[in-house]
Image (tube, rainbow, N blue to C red; front, side, top):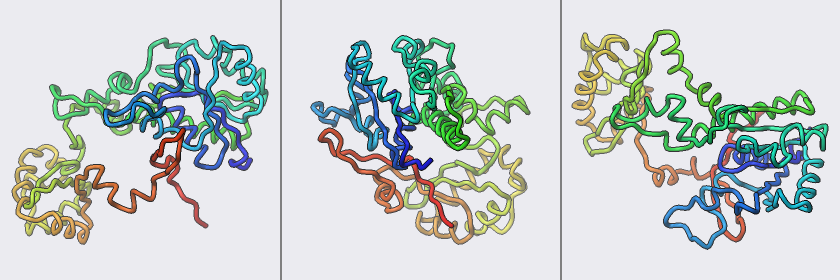
Length: 350
């Protein structure tokens, strides 16, 4: 099926589900977003910065996850509105939902209900902690419950959360993959389910394997890496600019020393294992040496020697670059000029 012919019905709010809807809308599918009239629609409409106009019907947060959708307000308890919704279900190819525990059944919008109306439906659902868990699930709670907050921050007294609702985004990616596979294999009817919890655990990657194989329980170490040094370590250049290094191989570390005019590797830094063990000494040494070089000279030298380096940038610096601005999508929504970043950034070539 041509994705531009797909009809998507979004029964979702906040971030994870709407991100999936935006993914399909960016690809050209028709997306109808149903919002609950009795609760003033998607809750993120009111998640506004202090600087935002209170009279606007939507917020920047809402705009970030709702691109090129037709929004329809319905009262699920009103018979006429319920029939309108049922007609949308009958005429949809894919449904995206993220109801609170029990609400899908209460409103007659579960997979079982929807496939009675449309036996060819592909139904995607996002839950918090799983289908049978009643707990409310917001991203920061999942970050706490799945280990992320315990290892994020500078130390155990200064924990931090990831600054974006990454677990919502992890779940959105999981659901996209499941829905695309169902479309590819023409599975109908089918329910594709994913929980925020499972998505978060699945994304633990090397941190999970460090624990499962070695019993290593990660502690918050800021931007640093538990297995590699210098990797994620931050230094100030001579002109007081912050840079971050990711010398993940022995060759890259040797090249870094060359940039710093050091011809021999100190014995305490001979291998990555020793550098991790002696990270404090390593950082003292690198802080002194990098502090003698301007940021432009150091970054230029790193590029020439293939040493991974980055300048720590604020968002205003990020969006000074055409490489970032080309990913912005503009749209006027309910009289508000909105901007968001694309969810579809892959390209095809032949």
